[in-house]
Image (cartoon, rainbow, N blue to C red; front, side, top):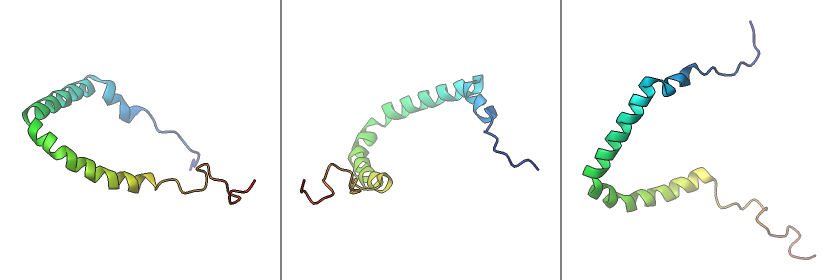
Length: 80
């Protein structure tokens, strides 16, 4: 059995540049346009709540505020 690493083929991604991929992209763009134009009030009403939810989510995914010791502080306690 051959256990060498083989890079993934481009076969699964080829449908994106095919006619079906372009048709799907066009359909999704039209659907997004009509959803936004018809439900603009709902979207803008929910936007502040989405921002409030995004903040803790980004803190969880980002990994904190960079307290790793490389933020420009001197590791010697401030003495030269």
